[in-house]
Image (tube, rainbow, N blue to C red; front, side, top):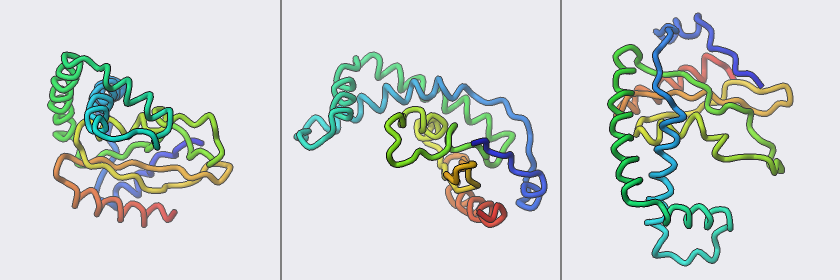
Length: 173
């Protein structure tokens, strides 16, 4: 399914306007986040018995144990640089409205579902430490839901939640 752009009239009713924006590379942020997530998850779960955890998660934890300290340290350095780079976005925008995923929601029995692919557009904001929320905004031809992601500057959770509530009502989904 295709996410239709939010109309100019809806944005104006919310007190905003659409504007082109120079945007940092999200895939690069995802690469940084993967190293940090793997290493930190492996460190947290090192003291637990993993017998009840699925093979796929155990494989990721094992991969995390193999992340060299230098790679982790470099990823954290790059994370800080990306946070500084992304801080410039807020000089031109109060909130970002983006697709939550690059695909529609998968069916429960979908064996081809890929969590990394599904979270590719939301994970960067986790890595950057920015508040974000996904709200329903429509459905594809099969009736599967589509999500719209709103992202706010750091520590602007109240603004984010107010905007999400107003936008959800305006979209009437």
